[in-house]
View 1 (spheres, helix red, strand yellow):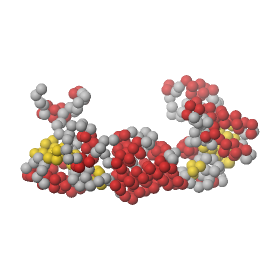
View 2 (cartoon, one colour; view 1 turned 45 degrees about the vertical axis):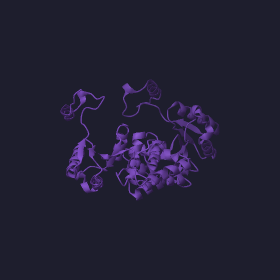
View 3 (tube, helix red, strand yellow; view 1 turned 180 degrees about the horizontal axis):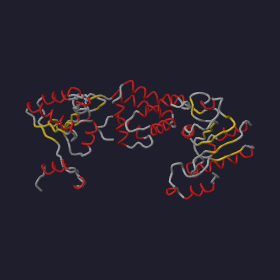
View 4 (cartoon, helix red, strand yellow; view 1 turned 90 degrees about the vertical axis):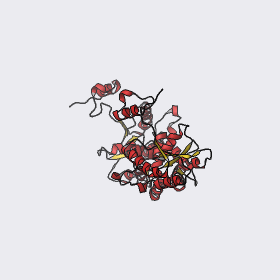
Length: 200
Length: 200
């Protein structure tokens, strides 16, 4: 770090640099922007970080992020509690909620089984899912992990654990995305789309 | 904001969204990253913001950012105090210092005169510059504002204020950037490069 840099500023730049997708130049830009904020604005930024960190934890039921005991979806009694959609990440819940069509509950795994990165089934929220299914109220579990190698493997692993419990396990449909182009679709997607074809 | 979002998280996303160059998706990504930090890491991020904000102010001499009374460059007695390089922004100082060739002092204006944005000469650190020149120790002022309309206008304005004080006022050279391509240089740059040609 060059000597003409100011210690508190360098520290702030370093902090921004550690964020994903932020390089040194962007970190510098963000740090100078923060310096230009009013004292109240800087305070509320600083507070927002600690606040989010302290208040947010996993929902007791579905392991989604919440600042209360249960997340808003698990608290909502109009939701169909007999169907659980299993996703990798809290952001996937937001994406699925955007469809405005799914009115059941979720279960967030917080990752996928990935032996290369040292992540085994115990580090994911799988036992919480089994406990929910064991309660007996659940009829169907939809596996909505990402269609990647790890996502598939995790879905397979969980479905094997669930089947003995007498619950229906389904998987999201594969196919060409709406608005996509057949020409640019890869072979695997296309063959899955043919496999999963339906009558019109 | 959709109801399934958690208030402290939404607030954090909003805070990131206000930063320059950060859209909603990136803000979400950064916020989730911050949630994944350890408590100590989040604390030091939060502290770095307030720290930088509280401790950093303008150098008494050159208006660069510093956490002490004088910035490291103004404190450095081996630097030539008779030459001042006037720049728009603290980042320009860093850029010029990277050349490792300039061994005089700087003066940071913190902006340019820009009537359209309501920024007049009084909002810039111009009177501090005049006070320094009035001291009598300064022999030359190099105008190193950006070669934009506002930068040029500011340089002209300041040079008119400085000339009656009997100080030499210079401007950074214009020309084709090193490693650049004549074919892609714009007309104004090229004609300035011809104007400023030198014997080899």
